[in-house]
Amino acid sequence: MTNHGEPEQWSKELSKYWMEEDPELAGILYVDGHVRVYSGSKTPLPKRYVSRQKLCLRGLTDYWVNDAVGKPFFVVSKAVNPGLLSVMREQIIPRLLRDIPKQPTGEELKANRHLYRFGVVFDREGYSPEFFKEMWEKRIACYTYKKYVNDVWPESEFIEKEVVLNNGEVVKMKLAERGVYFRKQDLWVREIRKLTDTGHQTSIITTDFMNNAEVLAARMFSRWSQENFLKYMMEHYGIDRLIEYEQEAISETTKVVNPRYRELESQIKTKSTLLNRQRVKYGALVLKAEGEEPDIRKYVQEKATIRESIDTLEKEIEQLKATKKNTEKHIEFSKLPEDKKFQDLKKSGKQFVDTIKMIAYRAETAMANTLQEYISKKDEARSLVRQIFMTDADIMPDEKNGVLRITIHNMTNPRNNRYVQQLCDVLNSSETLFPGTNLRLVYNLVSNQIPPDQEF
Image (cartoon, rainbow, N blue to C red; front, side, top):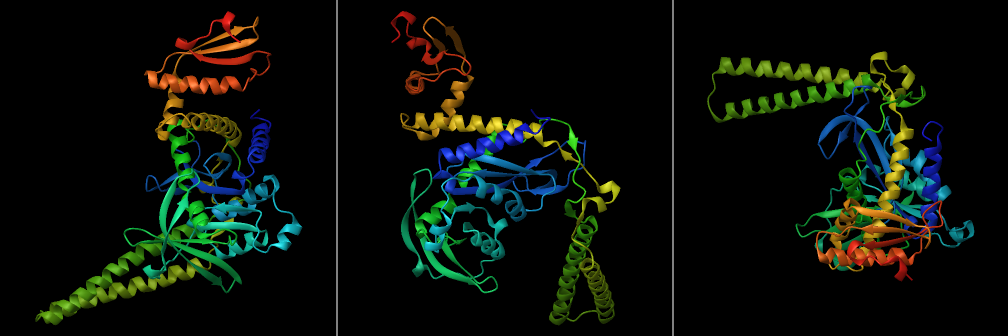
């Protein structure tokens, strides 16, 4: 399957099926990048910043697309990372436009100027008025955090409101709203701010004019569902593991960051830091001379030395900036120096395994949601499901009665046994046939096993 491109097609068909299965959840999509660190030595992949480790490390960037409650639809992997906006423009948005069901018709969009096809929620890396305008021309609503917030709104503008998060939890937030006009793009957006107990104001920008501030705040602040998903998948599903060692060539026309441009940026940053230090040293010397009588000869000599160093650094920085201005930031992969070239990790095997993991996560989520109806502590549902998966079970085909009996061994305590039995009852009521057979699946605990002659 992995050698002929089937995993990609399989993943696309599954993603479309999941969207069609629950169109309401597919109406708001969460997009986030996750760096998959590569510690191997087969190929020198480009470095990128890993926020969870606060380091620049070699790896690939996986862009995950999840529904409103954190369940995954698909993932896009990039060895050469063009950035969130480019990946959304070129791969994610076209796919969503094609696959999301029950989008408004052209007539409906014309009749209601605020109506949109679907919404995408992403972090401040995607903040771009040009992108908001481009998406709204396709009638796609954007939700993100605002960059460069310098002003503070009066606390009198904030009103405490009840916000229902995507998981059903109700929280109180102090919210305020204003309209913002981007003159260059000729675009109106809504800015909604949340006031925290410490006085900090978190700013949200959106092109959604259909819903009230409480709904918009819930959608933006429910991003934790996707962050929790990524954390959970790293811990329990090993999504960062290296699946195969094979590599594949990168297209010669792929745009990459020019190493010379990056080197110039680094040199400018280093010399600017030295320049600032020399300026601080110069200012401290002058202030000290004003406060007390200095040794004139020593003072003049030291002052001249620092001044000369400042002038030299300023000229060097100007020359580096002029060189940087005439240097292309991005070049084609074919123009990279040979010692800077690298290969991509083969995607088909990873995509195949990731698709299986998405199916498994969705199945686990469905089981956890079922258990939450019976468990008083809702947070324990997933840990109980994991316990079930690690518990021994007996699989006994009974062709005479047309059943495949799954007898699960007892849990760690009687309370969990009761929960598992209730889950078994729900699964049994579905009357599911084991694929490829006419045997109906029947689940039970060892202590509650039903004798074959008494069943039904």
